[in-house]
Image (cartoon, rainbow, N blue to C red; front, side):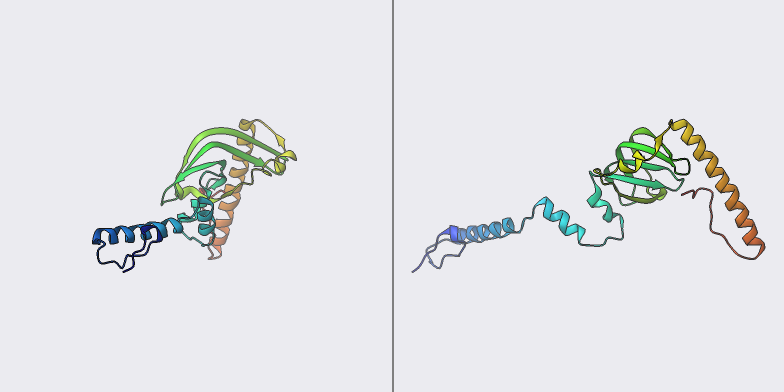
Length: 185
């Protein structure tokens, strides 16, 4: 008759060993296997990054990282993504709204704090490299936010007038031009 210890994870062949011991041995074996299967958080990130998600699940790797979000109305927001849901509604912390005026070589920004964004308004989002995010701003002059907002409003109005004229001209020739006044990006 041979009997093995429970530490080895092998079921005893001794008939005098009770069925309860055998179950404990199986549980020990199962626990050792499940402990061996656990992966670290870093490995989980690598695992998730290997798959191309086409749903809001693609955002999961950006949680707790700094991102930018471009909205349909042309608003550009920067902040730390804290959470999201299945509709791509986003919560940004330490959010900053930034307006770029590239023709004038200027920009402006204003703190927004904690910001909730409805997913239907998101055009694009992406992670920001925090080591290099200030490099483009060094070449631009920072101006007051109210001044930049007024300049952006004027530029958006000029674009609206121009695009509306195109829609009418295309329609006159039996063509369509895809433009909606809420899509200013």
